[in-house]
Amino acid sequence: MAKATKKQALGRGLSALLKDPENDIQTASDKNADKVVGNIVELDVDTIDVNPFQPRSNFNGDSLSELATSIKELGVIQPITVRKSGFNQYQLVSGERRLRASKMIGLTTIPAYIRIANDQESLEMALVENIQRQDLDPIEIALSYQRLIEEIQLTQERLSERVGKKRSTITNYLRLLRLDPIIQTGIRDGFLSMGHGRALVNIDKKRDQIALYEKIVSRNLSVRDTEKAAKAYHEGKSDLEATHEKSARIPDFAKNLATELTDHLSAKVVVNTSKSGKGKIIIPFHSKEELDRLKKLIFVE
Image 1: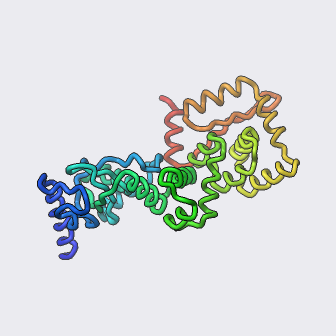
Image 2: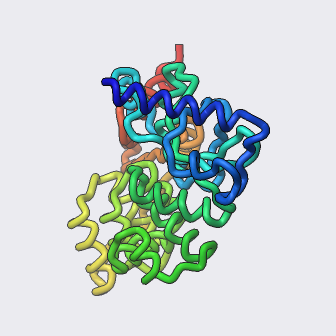
Image 3: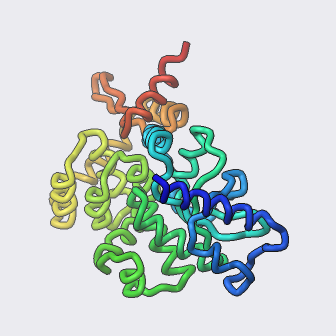
């Protein structure tokens, strides 16, 4: 217990050092830089700006609440990482979930590792550390890989070394970006998995990709069933053309309803109808939080 108290006190002492205008550390060669860079420092949460290079765009509310509860009980076990952006100002490199959760429970300070980096180094650190430590969805990971390749100019071989993944794994993620944007959104929203996406990539025509995507959602097809459908497509045995034509023959009232519900609920709604006029409305959801959100929109008082 004495050791933990000493460590915490050291962090507070370094925090005071950083707030002293005469010790405005900007480079690793500045006075007292060695006392700060790489050490754990208690920083005021309101001095930390969110990283614009953060690849994650979706934060699950339930998951954040669970993390907040854990932090309330045990504290922030893994410090966040920041880079100095100005006097007593910092930019987050990694740990946005920990920062958000800490703010949720009213913490005013958070333990942090301080780094001094330029924008390109910050981008690389943010992308690499988030890929390794966070539960990003497959499209977010693919976009992060693409940014590392294009903006940091890493080869796939070098990228493989940096993130500790096989080159074939990186290639499979990057291939997902060849999917129609509607399908990419479906993967991000949890309507289908990366396995579904990998099977859909093998279908060349975007309209056929969409036709099979709608079939996956409406019939709850497994990855194996999707792979079989993609194989049949290449062997000329696929019913995707018929599926596409059938979709095109959906009555206007059903199409309009699907569009209105999709816009209102911000979820991909499928409306199927038969010749007799009977049908069903399918509204997928991928978490309890999402279901609760849909219920509030549907059961308007």
